[in-house]
Length: 243
Image (tube, one colour):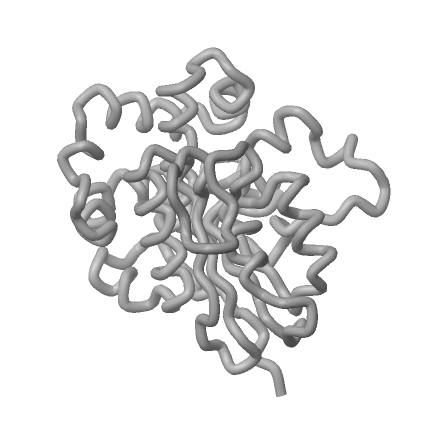
C-alpha cells in the first residue's frame, strides 16, 4: 500500500536539536538542495520525490543560473525550476505513486507539471507570497488547484527558513520587482530579516557549510517569525500557514 507523504509537525516550543530530529528526511534533503541552489546563485528552492514506500528516488533544485547540469536536466533558463528538475527525472511509465516534497509553493508552471505528472501527493515547505499578492484566493479561477492548502504546508520555524531563501535572491537581482513587492505586502517581517542577513553577510559567512549550521544560527529568529500573529484564527497566523 502506498505511503502517503506526511507532514512532520513543527511545534514552536522545542529547541533546535529536537526540531531537527523530528524533521522527516525528505524535508532535510529538500532543504539541503535549496541551500545548494542558493549557494550556486539561484533562487533557493529544492525538491525531492519519494516512492510509495517513502524512499527518496529523485532530487532537484533551481538551476536557472547554472552553467552546467547533469545530462537531461534543464539549466541556464528561466524555466529551470526545482520541481521541473526533479519531475523530469521520471519516465512516463514510472509509478504515479511518487510524492513531491518542495521547499516553496510551486509557481503556475511547476504546478501544471505536478498535475500532468499525476503525482500521488505534494507537500510544500512554505507558501509563496507572490500568488497571494497578485491573485488572492478569492480571485482564483474556479477549479484552479493549489498545493498550499490545509495539511500540505509544513509550518513552524522550518517553514520560515524555506520562505527566507527565495526573497534574498530577489533583493539582490531586482529589489523593486514583483517578488520583493509581494513579500513587502504579505511577509514584511520575513523581508526585513532577509534584508538584514544580506547586510550583515550572515549567509555569506555560512557558505559552504551544511544548512543545519545556518538553521541553528537562526533558530530563535525563525521561531519568532513562525509564531502565530494576532490574526492566526483567520488562517494567516504563521509564515507558510495555509489560508
